[in-house]
Image (cartoon, rainbow, N blue to C red; front, side, top):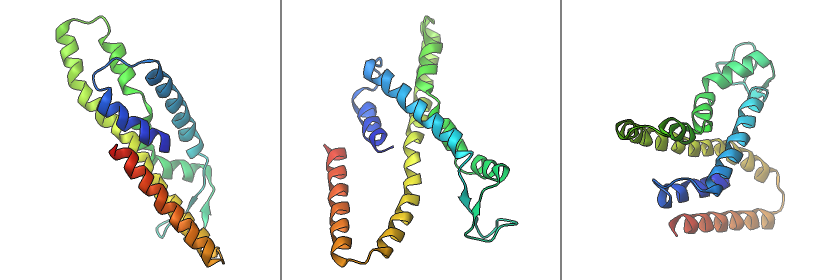
Length: 167
């Protein structure tokens, strides 16, 4: 996800309208495969019960496959599905060998394709869960020096990320 967050803005900014090169094709195949596996695994990953979860106390893990699937289909699945399908490849395949009027219609779809590619970045919202886990790990650490070192490292990495995206 982190590498995708660096590659996608580059593709948006510098490769807009160009035919995809070998790197773009390889990157699309790799990320599509990775996120497809992620979708499949998400149907088998337990989740923490919320306040409104029937039959399970809040805070406990829900491990029933049907409930996991239902929860995933209602929450992250639409975003995951829409962002995993390589819409650009489909649009290129559909427009290949078409007349100019049909190609113009396909050009209108480009905006939709760009939006769907942007949805792939929405996957980073899942990193919010990682932040909560990180806070729990920090709370269990005993050494103040270790906590401060990790905080400094985290600030440095955020600064490097911001500089990279602004460059």
